[in-house]
Length: 261
Image (cartoon, rainbow, N blue to C red; front, side, top):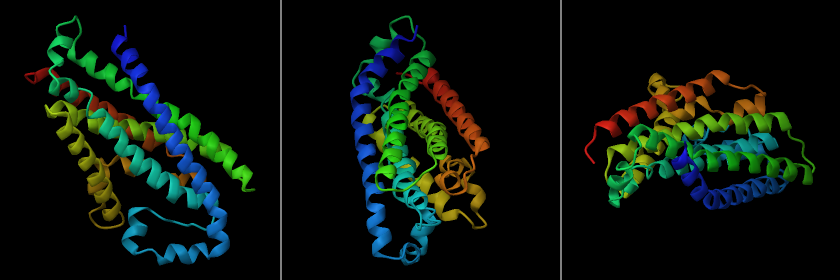
């Protein structure tokens, strides 16, 4: 059981280490840079200097505290955009890569169903998702302590736990692209474009009469500002993201089962 999940998970370990190191360096730099910015300028004036579309796109509420600074510089950019796109891109090769390289027929000649193959390979994405969310909060908390700033360890850990459903939902978008297209490169580009497009639509429509159109966006249900600035945890949003992931998995499996390889 779970042979495909174990095999794919083992292949993703090295890349997950590199990803965790890269994101941790970004986190350490963001924490280290905060005192320089806060001492050199008025952080609220810095926020007001940004164009309004950028403030809305990045949901910049305040930069006058380390929590607000990290919410923008690390979590809005690093988690919601970079990691969201990375997971969608990674998941887009789950099926399409083997179809593209002519290996899918060999895999399906074994006693394995298409739904099992897809879901086990999707589950292997838990390796990078969990690794980056275990390593980075430690780096954030230690770095904050080194510069003499205090962060709520509970809030930081909660933020990373709540990001897990979000990243899986983004991966679900990639999986759907992977079963729709035969070429991995096309599936990956579509996954990136759709994920980033959904982010832009949701952020730009926020607060307008068309805000309801953003209900399908995973980004709507994961807000770092709520956790770091207000100490509130959107468990309903996390449940919605899990439901969204489940729907994307089911739809992807149905398409994968019905398509001609």
